Image 1: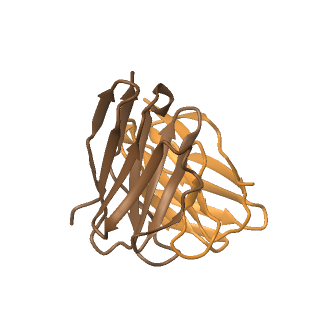
Image 2: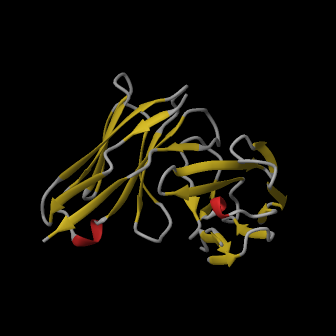
Image 3: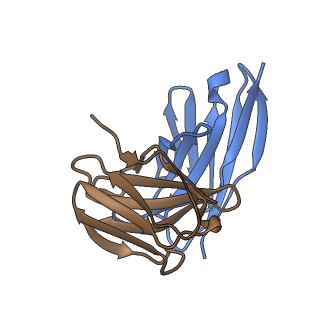
Length: 111
Length: 114
């Protein structure tokens, strides 16, 4: 089966750093994606990891450990507009195949 | 460059009625995915197409659901007859060739069946 776990909710303070964890057990692995979804809107692509290590993109970074089936999304210098759901998704087969999504972590940024 | 375009944005109808959701993928993208999102179950794949051909429809809940992709720029998801438990947000996404390519999502159709 396919299973992706992430915390349901998190709260953090404006200007702080927050780490959102994701663990996965899937039949195969061909990349891990993070998406951001504001309430009532579409998911938008944030980052992609296929090799172990850290990928940095501005205030956002994503880490992958394939041996541990683990990833995290790191958000620095939090802003109020970062309040959203963050979805972890795994592509378990090669090629243009579907993603398996976690249920998302709802992040609230407070002043 | 236009993104994935879905219509309608909102649909409210009575149970038993036929519902048709529409999607125009990004030009040049050869894969199209239909997902359904609910609070309880999150984002779930319903069906996907590569080069207009349905590849996997195992996520389609039952025979009341059907999807077509008559050409590279258009797809429909049809529910007939609709039931209250079909109420959800339905997203269409497209992606170009390449396993490292992300899927790009449309704004979704918020469907309410009364």
